[in-house]
Length: 74
Image 1 (tube, helix red, strand yellow):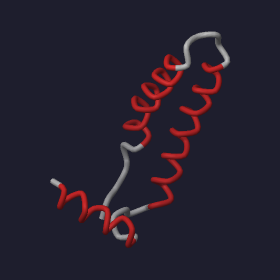
Image 2: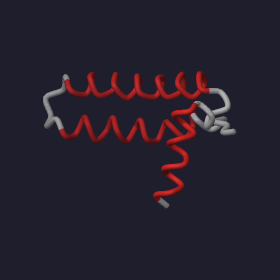
Image 3: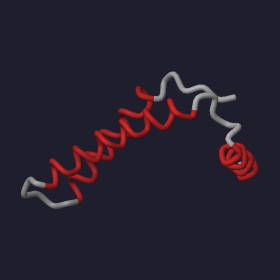
């Protein structure tokens, strides 16, 4: 398992893992931005800080598979 992860990491850093790296970066940035915006908005409410972190992480985790459904690897 570690060997597969190491091989994927080497290909990623060489630029040979992703077919369209800009699409991956754009979709990841969209998901991260929405999650961060949700975190900031929920942090303004007078509740314990662990709840906004949990909710924004959950929303971002649910959103990422839909954003990266057309993700292609070489």
